[in-house]
Length: 429
Image (cartoon, rainbow, N blue to C red; front, side):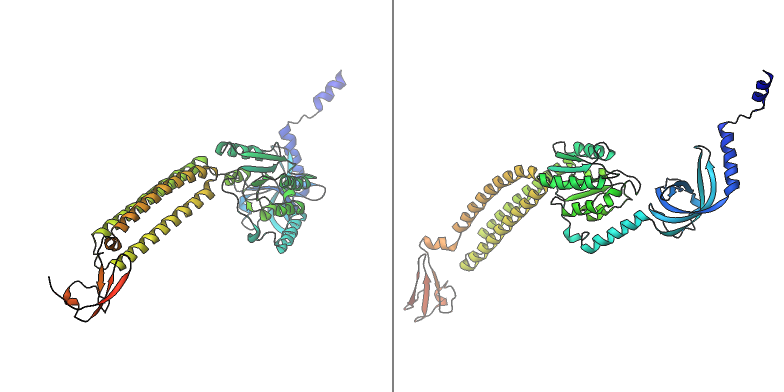
């Protein structure tokens, strides 16, 4: 009893904090400040301004922190996949019990293996022309059938479905579920893109996933995925990671979205916005038609009250040309606006096209009626009532016997035909 009691009384029991601080002190004393070389991974920059990341090699890794005050001397921007040499104090983060290096100085040691692969493939595909703007296609304004290549359970598909369902719940969506990271992910993504192209009937594809480290996003930097996107007959939106993340898929795709949510917003606008466009275009078309008809009526009225009968033939030609040009412009404007509406509104435009055609018929009838009224005012109509126009040898209209002389030849225009005569006698009445 006495020996066991003595052993119990003599043993030292540490609290977790005491043990952690003891280890921290021993570790800091044993190593102090050291240089370590490795590849940056899982880089994070919270609002505090500090940088947290992992430095790793093929077999091991160590947590690192670069406080904001030590970043001023850096001559480069740290990125995932970058190979660096870091100098700092080996320590222990007491809250988690993990050992880490508190970096005081860091220099670039060359490009890490992943970053080097990224740059090499980017350069290769750039030379092949896969990034050229000329080969990129426009995304449809209002697609009806949307294909999605992403994980079945990730945040990306939830965000996409939420936005598309809120904006246009009647869209047809076809999901090709794939792994988005890890071994075999790139092959699954490429196969899904090929499959959706074989199925056909889709207006656009969204290919992507949520954010992550360079390793997490790496499947979208694989050549097999890049070539599947370039080969796609369907326009592709690449939506990989967060806004700061760039992948090879982003460069090859027809359009890059900074996030999966942004991709959904790019696919379709808000339904109420399209309805506002329809109403505004309908209002503008109505105003345009009414304005043209009013202008035609005003011109017809002015023609009836003008000096048209003083030079009837020239004035008739002038108004006929103006009326024809006005009709052509009205017709051109109608058809131009209809084409624009049809491109923007798709199914919505069908109803409006029908309405516009009905209005066009009504306004065309008004134009024909006004043309008939104008023809009724024409001097030619006056000739049909038995009047005639006589011109002297100079071509001037004869209004008085003072305009001609005996023996002079004159030309007389009738409603049907004309004849020449010689003046034998003149007499004022």
